[in-house]
Image (cartoon, rainbow, N blue to C red; front, side, top):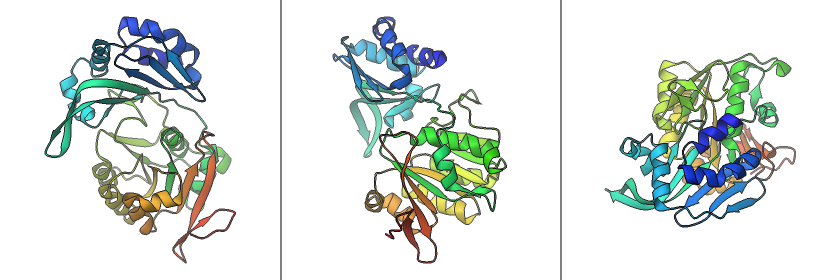
Length: 317
């Protein structure tokens, strides 16, 4: 825990660090976000609460913090900034808001930065225990193609990371042998590579492509690294769906995540609607937003009728 605290606090100017160090340290086990806004108090989002620190952050402190995040070369991080966030060592994501610069209908930069939001990434070893039993296919020592769904902040990425660790290291309780996993870590949140070395425990049979779009990364993994399972976080474009379909049709299984709360949400989202309509996803798992690591409900693909069946309740949608 101490290492993670130092990783985060090291980005803040001295006075800002002094203002929050005690509160961050005391609450680190439940800390989820650190929000900095120009001329506003600092807000710590905890698991079940919020803590306001009476320290008005200056614009200079915001810029100095961003400069430290970007290793004193904001220009070299322009693409990440244009996407609205930078992922830092340890897998923590720093969201950025301010005045957007638009060119050819695309954001190319964010000027006059107003706020920074540190979303704290944490490894929770064993948090995917409830999910494992739903997705492994012991008959072929692999998995069912799976989509894990929840609103933001419900722990999808944390569970995904733990699933990778289990599957790539083997699971004695299930007599499951370790398999090759290919990870498209577009934002660096899953493995948190630092100079080529994963900062998170993701197991022993994992190949990682970082800082590449999911559609390109998935195809690269299939063509060059022969994974048995491909993993990608937050599916968000039709190009992603095409790449997933390519992988599955090539004989590769997949675990993916998406934002949403209900099957209706997935049906209204043109991207996930397209994925579901292909009938290649065999399990759709909805996480409980309030109880981290707990499954709220699971849908199974009825291949004969090409419909999804709600587990236990037997409801066909």
